[in-house]
Every structure is written in structure tokens, then in C-alpha cells.
Image (cartoon, rainbow, N blue to C red; front, side):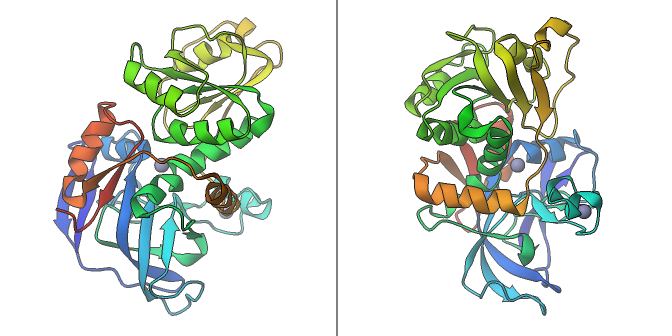
Length: 332
Ligand SMILES: [Zn+2]
Ligand SMILES: [Zn+2]
């Protein structure tokens, strides 16, 4: 099969030919029908995250068709469409797993980081961590739900869900464009903050229902109840706090962020909170897919043939995408 592997030494993807993996135990062998490209893949390729598995195949928004089952697998059948998210496995025994917080597991394995992911024609995934996908989304449009959608959803819940009336979204890419629609559907006022002067992304946010869009230095019309940060830029933490009302929360949704500059305590005073959101649980995945099945989200996805994975990553790095890049095998 054809696959791409991460090479942090060169900050590039390398295209290789590999044997099709054999599903063990609870694993499924999947033919990849589509795989989204996430900023975390960039961090893996660039070496912003410490390497966990040599020559790993990135990709953790995998829409796959089951083609074979491991000896202990039985939750799905051949021909089923399943989604493979970032959380690829947990230990089941640590204090976090036992406390229903498996997203914080001490010995997790993540898809496209600890396990080979979906930048390939085929991959294997533990069926216990796979999720069924809503039928209303085709493969290309279902893929971004698996991380951009899910992490955005978890961050949104961490910020109080629908109770935050005035919500700020910082960095209007794949995650924000989905959570924006979730928030608007719940009657929230969405404020979108983009890179300086990025009028295209600001228009995109308004088209998806944001009541206000501006650059990250601009003042919104009033104080916000909560902000979700998706851009990996530490300076945005004090910037978001500065426009957050007393008792409000700033949630950092990325796995990596540049250094947060020192800021005056006055920005945090008044019971404001700053917190991160890490990974996801299987419950998050099921809850979000149920919501996505009801909401008819407009998923903005740009398909790339699998052969052009390096171009997709370059476009994401350059901020050229509205919505999400999605790799599609067999479309050269
Ligand atoms: Zn654990
Ligand atoms: Zn991701």
C-alpha cells in the first residue's frame, strides 16, 4: 500500500510503500476512504511534539471501510463505514481511566502518533475506539468531524456549552467553523477573531452565523462570556482574557502553543479561568456524532488526492484553507 510517513528531521512527509497491516486482536483492517488533515499532524511532522513512533503514518480523522477483522473483533462487520479519531487506545487501569476521564490516560495511544494513522491506503484501528458516523455526511465531509469537530465540541463543553451567551472563537479554521455552527444552533452569539486583516476568514465566519468578526487585536462589541482558542499562538491567551467578563473562561484547544507571555494579574482577577482541553473520550465522540446527525453542519472540506498530502499540509501551514483539507486515496 501507499503511505506517507513523518520525518521530523526534514519537516516533511515522505511517501513510502508498505505492506498492508494485518489486524490483531480487537483491530479492524480499514480501507481508508478519506482522512482529514489536522494542525496536530503539522506538529507531528514538524517535530513540535516529541516523536513517539519512528516513521509514523500521520492522520487521525480517518473514515474507513472495514475490510477484515482481527480474531477478537466483532463490533463492526466488513463493509461498515467507521471513523477513527485521535484517541486510539487507553490503558483502562490508571486513575484517569477509572474515573471516566480516559482523555487524560497515563498510557494512551494516539492515532497517527503512537499508532499509524490514515495518510495511507489502509490502516488498522482498535474497534473499541472507533466511532460510527452519521449517514448524512459523505466520506470527505465526515472526516473533519473526527478531530476538528470533536475537539471543538469538547472545548465548547469545557466553556459551559450553550450557557456562554457571547462566545469568542480565536483562529477560524477547521475546528472553529464547525463549533461556530454548533453555537449558533444553540442561540449563542459568536465572535470570530482571525489573523490581522484576514478578511476572507472573517467573511467565512459571518456566513456561518458569527454576529461579529475581526482581527485578534480588535475589540468585540462587548465583553465575552467564554473564548475558545484554536490558533497555536500564546499571545492570544492574554488577548482573550482582556475581552472576557468576570467569571468567564478561556479554553485552549490545541495540543501545542507558542509560549504564553507574562501578563498582569488584573487580566485573571475576577474569577476568570484559563484552561486547556486535552484529547477526547469515547463519550465525547458518541455525543458529538449524535449532535452532528441532528444539526446538518455545513462542513467545508477541500479534497486532495492522497498523493498530494504534502501540498495539503503546506496549505494548512500557510493558512490558505477555509475549513479542512481532506486526503482521498485513489483520486490521483
Ligand atoms: Zn489509562
Ligand atoms: Zn486533530
